[in-house]
Length: 101
Image (spheres, rainbow, N blue to C red):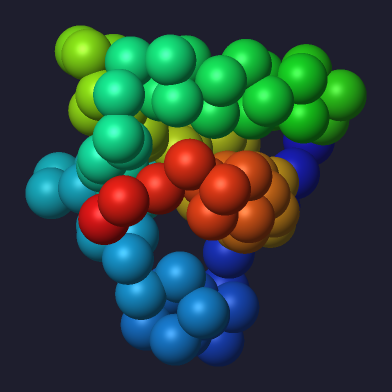
């Protein structure tokens, strides 16, 4: 099982992952991506799903039209782990080819 992030490891949330925010009353991070259209949003989700499956670490996400809301937390660890940091980085990289904001 993955270990929860230390306070020092959480510092990356304010720098490299500044677009992600902490979820109130939960040890999780969230981000909303806005794409140019539904096709771009779905392509992003498909690309991320393949990465997530390879990691055996799956996001909580919600999609309406061109908006994708993502929440990351490692459920079996009870909060944020390096798996969440790695998946957030991967999702941000995947989004660059589709993202409008």
